Length: 42
Image (cartoon, rainbow, N blue to C red; front, top):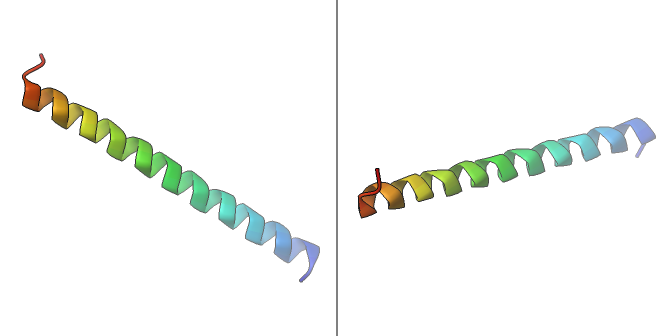
């Protein structure tokens, strides 16, 4: 594999990690909001 190909693959991996991380953070926030609404917090 060429150096450029390796760098491309690496950046794609970072992109994937970033998407997964931001998605899980979003889901976590939704869960907190849902729990708060259920428990009757203002």
